[in-house]
Each structure stands twice: as C-alpha cells, then as structure tokens.
Amino acid sequence: MSQPIALVTGASRGIGAATAVLLARAGYRTVLNYHTSAGPAQELQARLQKEGLQALAIPADVGDPQQVDQMFCQVESLWGGVDLLVNNAGIAAPQQLLTDCTYELWQQLFRTNVDGMFHCCQRAIPHMVHQKSGCIINLSSIWGIAGASCEVPYSATKGAVIGFTKALAQELGLSGIRVNCVAPGVVRTEMNSALDEQTWEELREQTPLQMIGEPQDIAHCILYLASEDARFLTGQVISPNGGLVI
Ligand code: NDP
Image 1: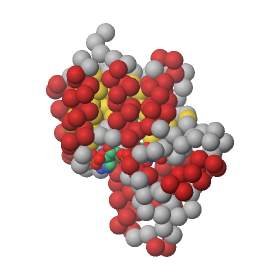
Image 2: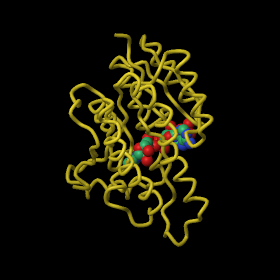
Image 3: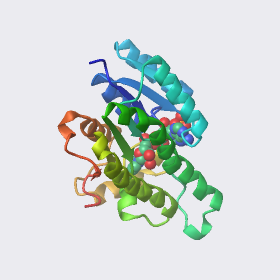
Image 4: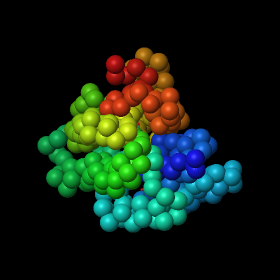
C-alpha cells in the first residue's frame, strides 16, 4: 500500500508542527497547512525533506471555504485524497468578561476554530467515504470540557468541537471512518505567550502531575489516535492535561 496522506491544519508551529513531525516520521506523506507563517512552515518542510520524508507546506485560511478547497485540490493532484485529517488550527482571545467581548471577536473565534473544522471535514470526507476508511482528529481544549472564566467565546468554540466530533463519529462509523477529539490542558506554545512566569508556575502547581505540557505530549496522543492501535476508538475525547481537569 502506498504511503497514507495526512493533512495537519496550523502546522507552522506549536502542537500542529510537533504532530506533523511525528506523522511524517511514522510514514505519512504530510501536508503542513499554515495561514500567515510561511517562513516557519517552509523551514519545517525543508527539515522533514532533509530527513528523506515527504512533507508539503500549503497556505490556506481554514475559515475560507475557497482556500480550503484549493488546498485539497493541490494535495489531490500531487499525492491523492487525504486519509488522515487533523483539525488543529486555532486561535485564542485575550482574557475578558463576556460583556466586554465584541461580536466581531466572537465571530472571529468561531470562524477559525469551528468553521475551519467544518470546511476541512466537508472537503475531506467524500474521499474517505469512497475508500471506506479514514481518520479525523479535532483539537478541543480542557476549557471546552470544563469552561474557563473570562474565556467564554474560546470555551464555547472548543465545546462545539466536542459535539461536532461525537455527532460526526456516529454519522461516519458505518463508512469505516473514525472521528476523535484531543482536548489538551495547558501547553507551552505561542498561543500562551501572554502568560508570565508566575502564572506558568501557578498552573504547574495546580496540576496534579506538576507539569506544563509540551507540544510533543499532545502530538503523541494524536499519533496514537491515528494508528491501528486505536481502531476501536471513535467519538471519544482524550484529554492530555496532567490531571488539571479530571
Ligand atoms: P499556536 O498559536 O502555537 O499555533 C496555531 C496554529 O494555527 C498556527 O500554525 C497558525 O498558523 C494556525 N492558524 C491560526 N489561524 C489559522 C487559520 N485561519 N487558517 C489556518 N491556520 C491557522 O497554537 P497551539 O499549537 O497552542 O494550538 C493548536 C491547537 O490546540 C489549537 O486549536 C488550540 O486551540 C488547541 N489547544 C492549545 C492549548 C495550549 O495550551 N497551547 C490547550 C488546548 C488546546 P499561522 O501562524 O500560519 O497563522
């Protein structure tokens, strides 16, 4: 069988980049989607190609259905249909009360975190149904499970990811497609760059395992969910979070 094709959205850095590296090393031809960070995405592509692996950086704003369609067309003409879709691209917002949140910011968060997943799934599923196999992994968050004060819009998008995952898993099971969700705890990435050292230390102390997550901790969960070892798993939420939310 030829090498399977994985598409990771938001693979220019953080959790997406760590996931793309593991998938490429596990034998996937890996699409590194990015939006604005062309330099880091191309550097990652070059790094993986140097290892003799197949990686391809493609820009697309996942919130724009036309750009998503163009990205999938490019992948299909070069390599073929996508076997594994990792909906990782996401944005957060500064912490604020819901009453201070503008409708524009609310819409921006849903456009990337929820609409992006919708557009990519719509585009990926027909090929998966046709071949009667495929795997979709969506990135939620502990805040999508537990909710976070002053992060209502972000928590709402990540809660939506969980409902979407469960419903889609029911819909696609008979087609041999698994759909799961990874809901990370606090991970050291650019998304959290506004946190100061004292806040990191407090978060570490509140976490039963006394750790802050690294992108690789999440990437390993994604790699497992994508693998044959997880063939009996669908519609589930796995939360690598050091015990912060149990
Ligand atoms: P980063 O901010 O480090 O990276 C975000 C990635 O998403 C970048 O590659 C960025 O690309 C991409 N992206 C943003 N908007 C778009 C868009 N419109 N179209 C395509 N790509 C886009 O985030 P993390 O690695 O920390 O987070 C990855 C996922 O994990 C997110 O969904 C996040 O919500 C979730 N998560 C993160 C946690 C954490 O503590 N870090 C905890 C729980 C969940 P570019 O730079 O090219 O614009």
